[in-house]
Image (cartoon, rainbow, N blue to C red; front, side, top):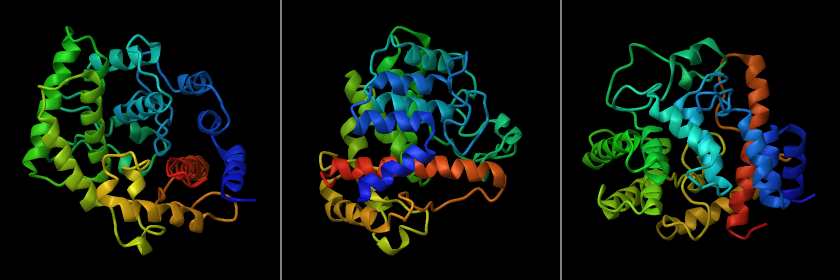
Length: 305
């Protein structure tokens, strides 16, 4: 079997229903409706998402990171109608102010500590430091894209987006690749919504170009064993605005994906929980299936399937 067939077999053996529906959507002519049906099982009555949608945290309650994961899935399958029930639910959750401290939506929430989770999702009441805009920059962009421009939520989204922009452009504190991705979505959502005057979007794009070029690890020998930034964190095809300045490394990742596929059809992970061994054993299968899908989508984006 080839790369595709082996990955497909692994996904069918171990993927969650949501990721199997995503696989079928991208590679088998499946419907977005099937993806949404599976995604709906993670949405709570308050409109937010939980239940381990982000598979490193099994907290069933709604949380900003879990809701971010849902918004990414909606974007992936082309759901962009502000009247869609899931989008309206997310806006309702954000408008309620749950997990919002007046400046950012929490990167972690207290309830995480009561359920199996990776250590980076632990909540620490004593944690201090500059605001963490993962996923706040993303959620502000989501609000600007989908909320009623005359609503209080939209006003909040404008303010938070401006604060996030100012914090990033001042460059006082380095940000990680996951936060940078949230800023990329903020840029994209603003452009899609026609929001041109709120932020200096050309300046934001220029800053992100520098960030992406600096984040991508050129030491390809570390890609398989260390949690480092690969081009696929930011780039999905040669059409990406970040492709021209990272072309050689982005193209190399296609070869790397094919070369490092394991015998079972999936790829190794560069992280583990270090606790909750039984739950991690389950989550690890979910992640490997999800990463198999991501790798095949990258190859598809580069016409390498």
